[in-house]
Each structure stands twice: as C-alpha cells, then as structure tokens.
Length: 171
Image (cartoon, rainbow, N blue to C red; front, top):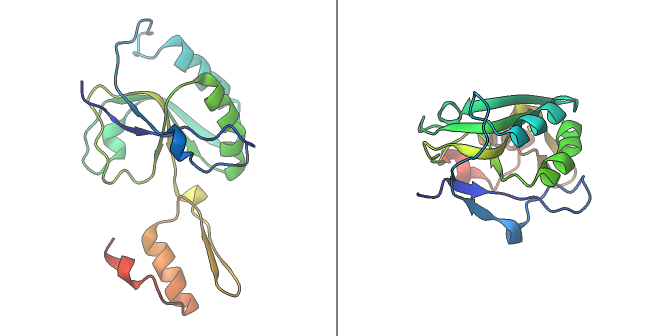
C-alpha cells in the first residue's frame, strides 16, 4: 500500500507552542482497522470526536471524504476533521489530540496534496480563514496566521507599501 502523505506530530511542549516538530514527521500508511462502527470509524476515534466536540472554538466532523477538501478532488474518508474557529480552540484541543496517539495531518486549502482512497485514520486539522489574521507590527514585521491566503498577504503588504514578496505573486 502506498503512503497517504505527511502526518505531523506537534511538540509536546507547552500547549501554546503550535510549531511543527521536524523530528516527529512520519508517513502514515493506511492499515486495516479491527473494530469499526457502522460508519467505519473506530471506537477510539468516536470517543476522541465526542471529547473534542466539548471543546469550544472547534468544528468537529467525522468520516469526511478528503477528496472534497483537496484541489485534485481525490481521497478517502478522514476519521476526524477539526476546523479551528479560534486559536484558543486549537490550543485547547491539541493536548487531547496528542494524548490520543492518532496521526495528525495539518491541511490548508488542499493544494498539492494527494490522499489515498483508503483515507486517513487520524485527525485532520483543517486550517481555515478563522486563523488567517494578517497584522503589521511596525516598523518592519508582518504577522500572518496559518490560515491567511497568500493573495491576501500580498495585497496587505502592497497596501502597506512594502516590497520583497513580488516573486510570490504567481504561487
């Protein structure tokens, strides 16, 4: 079976530390599941979903076809997809996700991602516009959230009169 893609494991440091640990990247390979409910989700995934639904600032969905979330429109179901609606919601959810031991896939707009038809038996963290704040910190700093669209970042810096990111206009 071919590998599905990159799964990121976050550092177990302070919960507010959400930077990906490059030492913990692993490739997730789909494997047969032993105890699934009628929707194909394991009881452990169902339990984690129920726990995450009690965390504020998150949208939690189960058994989500990942093809709907990628530009190539291919891919089987994800056991769990969480979409943070607030930064605090993501910070509160991370310890629970890490304790579950499930693989984690951080997904933005889904471009340049190929997902196996076997799906992903882990937690997909879908980073969206709710985490897309763009702020200027004088005199020369730009802070862009993980959910910021590149086109919005470029418009923002152009409005500020800054230069240096012109090369990225076609990305």
